[in-house]
Amino acid sequence: MRALAGRRDLACINTATLGHREPFERTVRRVAAAGFEYISPWRREIDEDHPEEAAKLIRAAGLKTGGYCRTEYFSADDVAGAKAAIDSNRRAVEVAAVLGAPFVVAVVGGLAPHSKDIEASRAQILEGLAALVPTLRSTGVGIALEPLHPFYAADRSLLNTVEQARQWCELLDPRNESIFGIAVDAYHVWWDPELEMSLQRAAGRVKALHVCDWLRETHEPLLDRGMMGDGVIDLERLRGMVERGGFTGPIEVEIFSKDNWWRRPPDEVLNVCRQRLDTVV
Ligand code: ZN
Figure 1 (cartoon, rainbow, N blue to C red):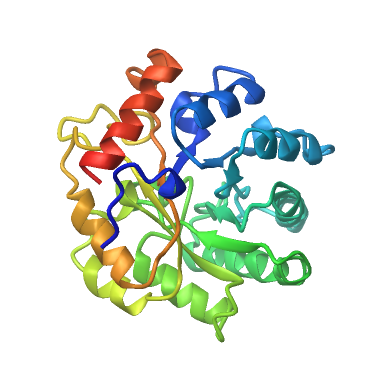
Figure 2: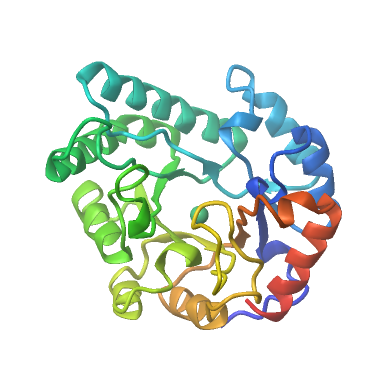
């Protein structure tokens, strides 16, 4: 297992951790100063008509782009909606290429808004992902499929375990040409009794490792994520499982915390993230 202490080159911050309170330019400067080499921005922060401007900011700060967040939901009530999602996600892939991001994180979508047909929605999602293949091939950017905790199955993601993500990778990218891989987010997968076995089977497929913590007395499961070390997840063990599968990328901190960390000064948040990467992840 890699030692993370002092490893700027293994430290990545997802900008959502800072609550999107400041202009991207300022965020980039803070992240670089706090000892991270990678930054993973969200689409809302990037002018997708002129992504080269953000790319320039990132490079000028001495940073690299981790991943690009994120796809729109592929599930939709009608053909026009599904097509619009694919078009938007194609654009995200093109922008990721300009930003130098190796992958776009895919949060695939839950049930289509007026549907109870879970199989049909899953099929629609897979079709949408497959439609991106020509753009993925031409840009060299991959998709990191992020399984979400099953709490989100209705409204955000019908992809819910690492094993399911591995199966989708097999379907979409059978020769493992790195077109499709997996984003393992500790918050979403820590509870899975088959996690270790799933990660063994998914060796060579993991593109990203997102860390935060699950607070034992959490208020709600979307915007009350904990700082690493403040909750119940054995992050070091989880990282070990991922790294034994051949993962060599940076560790990405991603904390959605409306009532706590998003209220604290950004530099404090970054410094605590950096310390906890060194000590508890
Ligand atoms: Zn994540």
